[in-house]
Length: 253
Image (cartoon, rainbow, N blue to C red; front, side, top):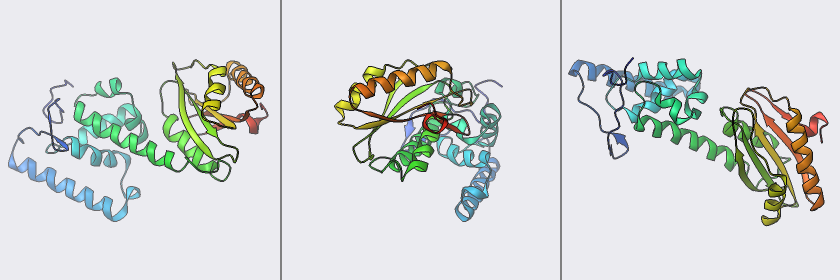
């Protein structure tokens, strides 16, 4: 389907307030149908919450703001068909989203605002919290920010002497199966933050969190760098699509 399809195209037009400038509707009848559909869907969401609607309709609600006066159902379906579920749609890289006919700047902005909001909400439940009492929240945060990435990311969670989270930083990005990690830089940054301990986290885009030999070797290098400076490496978490692996729990640390 061409990018100029009039049914749900999202031309890169300037913003008016918080919405893209709409093109004139094809007919009054079509506009009335779309308005009624949107009203019903919003009412069902308000009454029953997210549990009352499937992923593609939740996606429609997000797209309403980007494309104010056109039927967004075909675009929502196209995005779901390409990426599989709501989470993968909002976390998909911008270039891959633009491959979908009808996706332009306005749609990209709405999807990435939802992604950023999810990350901030998850992060707020972790920062300044005791890591042991908030372990589930930490895992939720890691899955929210990393589980659906298509390339590897390496993060470090820094803790104070009471094991309270004082920092969360991305240390590197990589390819689908590799991310460069510099153990001395990880330990050096911990000292700069006055941290006493840390947890390192990276994702496996393949979905399988089983550690590779390179993962094991890198962890031992970080452990040695931390030990030399009196820092504690509490754990290394590998985040897969639906589960995670703890080096501590599995006996690697």
